[in-house]
Image (cartoon, rainbow, N blue to C red):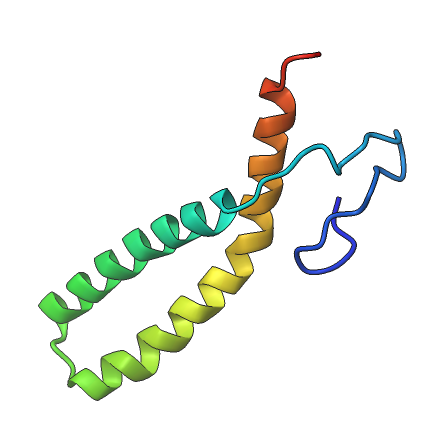
Length: 92
């Protein structure tokens, strides 16, 4: 489905499905931010309750973790959104 990190191929190599008509636009980043935000807030609250480390330690751990998790999940969420759009699209 993807020809690069987030760039979509014009069509499927196997079945020839046109991917250019399936536009996900801003939905994948929105959903990714919501997922990662919920995970990171829960992790930060749990860390604060259990260990109460200094702020610089939390920043040193959770900022890179947030960035890595966001970049790792974004292509999967974009693929899922495009799949949902394709399955719910009504024939013209």
